[in-house]
Image (cartoon, rainbow, N blue to C red; front, side, top):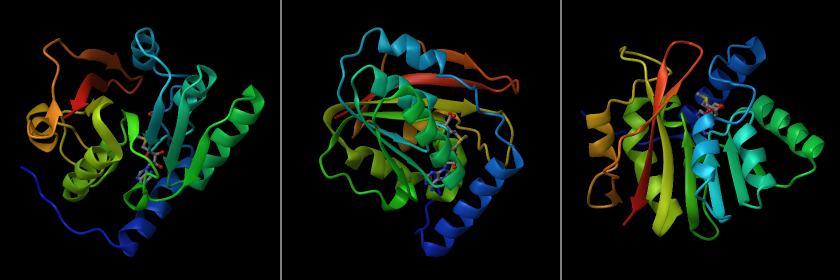
Length: 203
Ligand SMILES: C[S@@+](CC[C@H](N)C(=O)[O-])C[C@H]1O[C@@H](n2cnc3c(N)ncnc32)[C@H](O)[C@@H]1O
């Protein structure tokens, strides 16, 4: 069931407080400390392009993409996540555009070729999912691709909010997105949860 509701400045402030507090308390169970194996697999078949990473966290994937010559823009609402990513980028001596902001306010100067959606959606309250899906569509150029890792918790509540696949099919609907025929990537997390990886093409 898709719900939607307008997002306002209070929602953004609440999200900032909530996510920053998680980083401050060290409650970052999703953090692998290195780039996701899904990205490493997908990268075998990818050419550098212009990519957006919303909800990048500490951004190991951002560093990996930048190291391989991608033009990367990374967004996170939590200042601590952004600070970690900036120091990682400077330690590795690679460049990415790193922005601390509410992703719902992000305006692309030019459409992106690629979106790397690694468990950002599961961090967003379900009532704002439809607005997020519309942004994903608008950020990408036609023919651009979204590399998505949909969190599977099998439980109500969150975050992380379960990304039921039927809901995902409605959210990223056929009018705007082409879904692949092949089976998804299965990506386990240390928490016992897992992600399902799909590459969707923006029509
Ligand atoms: C589950 S974590 C995933 C982080 C990273 N993608 C990873 O897999 O390691 C979700 C991330 O989304 C960020 N986030 C949540 N709501 C956001 C918002 N409205 N705008 C930007 N970032 C947001 C959080 O701060 C957090 O870093």
